[in-house]
Length: 265
Image 1: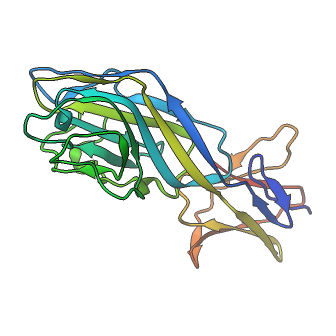
Image 2 (image 1 turned 120 degrees about the horizontal axis):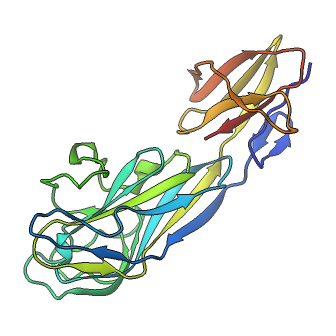
């Protein structure tokens, strides 16, 4: 009767499998054209602009920052930007920023959006290159065009909304122009920097049971098992976890064969 646990591309160490923490940057350098129309809000092209994150195995998100390269617009306060993660969490990155009276246009502005920045984006001075907190100066009185989340489902201006989620999957940047006239462009596209920590799946034997546990703050992972790794045939362990001391705990009966476990997206 043999019992093992692992995460994909992880290291097996004495009953606990660990995947290394790290910081990863992914980019979509295609330009985003900020369109204008007589019936705003007007979706940009592309809409959404997407970045696919893959192969960040055995980890969960601890921090996200976003870089927007080459932002230009005649009236920056018209532009609203929302980021949506693979599990549906979202954050308002910018809305109604820059001066609300006739401002100088934003030209080739590079923005780094970071919860840990010293300040938010300005409302009463021109928008210039720099590092800012996500900033929504006014509540949206409209819904972004589909398939973006409705205003009622927006989670607010903080990138902490993505903490503890699985980073793998499609991240979508939705850009709209909310007032006619004026248009713009993001010439260099955007980048996503994700810091991660390892998901730790631990396993103990309790008589004839395998007791598996992992932190219950992690979102988007499913416990799976396979009797072989040559090749693996993973199936979901269909036992609802019980939360004990901040961990998801699953107790699974042991069989008279080798069983491998993993957490998978």
